[in-house]
Length: 359
Image 1 (cartoon, rainbow, N blue to C red):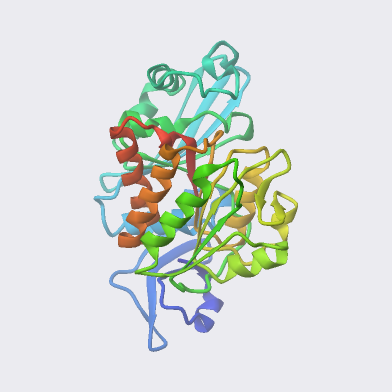
Image 2 (cartoon, rainbow, N blue to C red):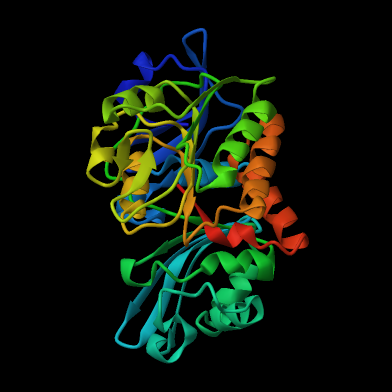
């Protein structure tokens, strides 16, 4: 769902809803029907309700405007910083028909906690939960406990901290928010899916999960599956012609191996028209946030990407195939990720903690 400036509305011909930005305010939610604007109810919010560099994040803006017409929605935006032995939290909560700013901080030396290293894969779930709550002030915990979705932006030096464990504690969906520095106009939905994988005999489950996902989607959508990518230009064409892209591949120190190319922060700049949604099922590498940031700034709505090393296992295959099984019925990225995470947690797999969802 795009955010349009007032002078862009007349040339917008897509069926999906949109928001109008004019003189520091957002108005919505609109649809166009036979060239005329339609809206069940028009609501508005000032742009200063969020940090300046998030004013084109239409997933976040859409939820805020939806909140003003449906007060059953409960979500919070938080920005987390670490400086001089203090972790500070600042944001806005949208709960029980109220919009209120929140701010708090806690004095803590991360070097004296389990978060003194970016490698936390060997830490028990119980210890991880206890440690996360130990760096969040009580008043912030109270707000989070009453929310449904937490939009979270952390500064780079603490971005590795797995706040996603809050799902296991409070049952909330945690979404990483990326800065967006330009307006993005959507090209409309095509109901097309693309599955990309790299054939490699060392990794048994890569092709298996790709084939299973193809079977789950093919009855409801147009689906293309490929392992033959010769150039970044070829990848760009495929990205731009599909709504959803799933990538199952190996990662080396340079980036993600897709066909004959390596996808990293340098090659991703050749992708100008991204898919609306993407799921990267590969190991984390140093530039994955740069890849995600470029796609979101270019027009992607949401992206699932790895926070840590993703093992080639039946458990991770189970997570991805379950996710797309739900997608095939709902076509709702948030709902599918939430339900799949819940199933993962209840089965004691905890594979949802390997991934992050960003917008």
